[in-house]
Image (cartoon, rainbow, N blue to C red; front, top):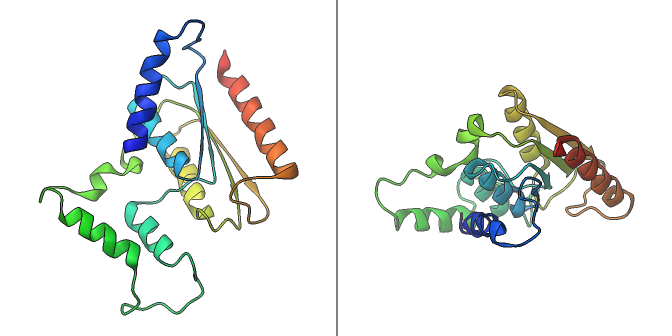
Amino acid sequence: AYYTEDVLNLLAGLTDIDGVDIDHVFMWGHSMGGEVTLRTLLATDRVRAASMWSSVGGDIWDQSYYYSRYKNPAAPDSSDTDKSVITRLQGRIAELDDDFDPASVEPYHYLDDLKTPIIIQHATGDRGAAYKWSQRLAKELYMRGKRYEFWSYEGDEHLFTGDDLATAVARDAAFFASVAD
């Protein structure tokens, strides 16, 4: 949320810069920046289209569980296995108002309000951010009739390189051009 606030302030400040075409602002987010992008799009209509690469997603508990097991996802798991990320999150939530509901701040609850087209790109074997999170976002956008494209890449790159990078950039450019007018 803090990063989203920074982006919203940046977008608001664009009107003060000479020569900026505020009708053609596009956004790109990678990993956690993908979630920041989604939150930004839900808060403003100043972004014409957005790209999300290898985006973090799911709800906060999905993310906490995933990153608790990130270093060794093949290790046995049980109720007795420490899940440090979940424990830290539970502690932080306990410090907040008693009325705070973590589900109330999940972007997926507000996708009906989304107006901005999104292109999603993710490698199927990415361990930095689970591929299933991009699949879920694509599914949720489809179910709501939102405009999106979803591109999958073989391999495990969290940030594309080589041919995948060139392809992803070209797909972003084509997508942005398709919504520019």
